[in-house]
Image 1 (cartoon, rainbow over the protein chains, first blue to last red):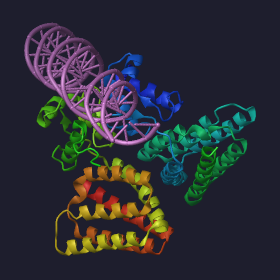
Image 2 (cartoon, helix red, strand yellow):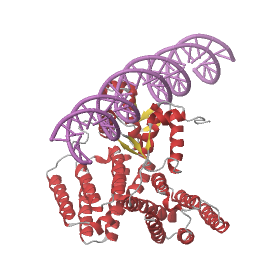
Image 3 (cartoon, chains in turn orange, brown, blue, yellow):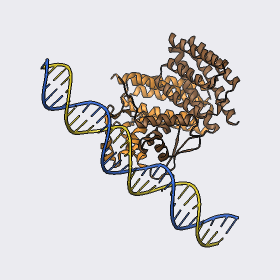
Image 4 (cartoon, helix red, strand yellow):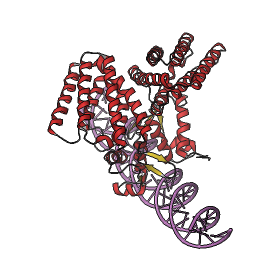
Amino acid sequence: MTPPLHLSLAGQAVDVLREQVLTGEIPPGSRVNEVEVAQKLGISRGPLREAIRHLASEGLLTLVPHRGAFVPDASPDDVRALFELRTALECAAAELAASRRTDVDLVRLHEVCAASRSNYHAGQPFPYRLDLAFHQTLLDAARSPYIAEQVRLVQQRVVLLRSALEDDPPHQHASMDDHDELVRAIEDGDAARASTVMRRHLSRVCAQMLTSLNH
Amino acid sequence: MTPPLHLSLAGQAVDVLREQVLTGEIPPGSRVNEVEVAQKLGISRGPLREAIRHLASEGLLTLVPHRGAFVPDASPDDVRALFELRTALECAAAELAASRRTDVDLVRLHEVCAASRSNYHAGQPFPYRLDLAFHQTLLDAARSPYIAEQVRLVQQRVVLLRSALEDDPPHQHASMDDHDELVRAIEDGDAARASTVMRRHLSRVCAQMLTSLNH
DNA sequence: ATGTTGTCAACTGTCGACAGTTGGCAGTTC
DNA sequence: GAACTGCCAACTGTCGACAGTTGACAACAT
């Protein structure tokens, strides 16, 4: 009934470290010292090593033999290649969502879009939270667990390049329009259009990210 | 110059275990005993645990808390979901290959296709080796490292469901025709057709796999 | 015979300590 | 002063041992 009320130490360490890496508390380029972090978390090096390896498998850390684990900072080429992967996955998800969505899915998608707009007009911070929520809702509608899992991992790596999270109103506005158009295509069951719109949307996001990388 | 002439014990254990899992030496459904395997490999439990976690992150093992690691055996739904992911990735790769391929890529693709046919007529075993080689060559032509990496992982998981590797001549013949048509589309730089052919090809392979799952 | 409870062996989760490697720094030479 | 060499501290890679949990078996009650 109560599956694992308390996770293993390694699992807890994964959660804590992931949060610290994604929020930038451990900045890109810096190293993760095993003994230091283990003491700070109050655990031994064994579980911490497992946590580090796990995050490395998610792409949130890069391992260098005999040197340790580093938080990766991305080059423009990395960003482009990463978005090629993301585009492949999310376009497929959009197509599947268009053909499999239920009425409940549509309600949820509309809700997230409406929440985004009200949040935007209220000037709330962290608008990307709702952006992630939209893509997550779309993935639920696609009902393809393996694709969903991979998208989750890719989105994490994108968040790691938080440089583009600066609130850029024109970009936010365009994104919300993209989202609305995506929902309409999914509502119509038009897989081809859903894929096309998603591709354009991600292309825009990628470009925005690249420009903010160059300052 | 000689980067790591001898890998870490964990790295070696990963290679050995992956081979054993993929060849079925450790059959699906069976458990991996940490102390037993560690002794057999002549290493300690620490490095072996890291190897097990690594393979789990690749989808070749599933971890159950306090129970251990198991070799997963797939249900039809798993196969379908896995091929949805594979289709998303490889269709994108086919499109990219069509727009980025060089003359050298084309030569290599033709070579692999020719090798497949001669191998087929010679009645050699393990025809899937050359199938993997074809898809690998196509990925090289796509020049999208993240997509390539994910495809590699998915293909591994497909190999794990080796049930469909029974040499089925009609299926092999159809696959080789698909490959040839794919190369033509890539040669023409026709991304849309490359994607379409790849989708049909993988759909056929998935169907073949599902039928051989039901015996 | 069936269901329940107590016990136990086997295994995973975790820890602290030792060994091997790496990068940097001081000392030396030209 | 610059380049090279040898040493050293810090850190990762690895190991063996202990603690906690799980599933199964046996004994018992119904």
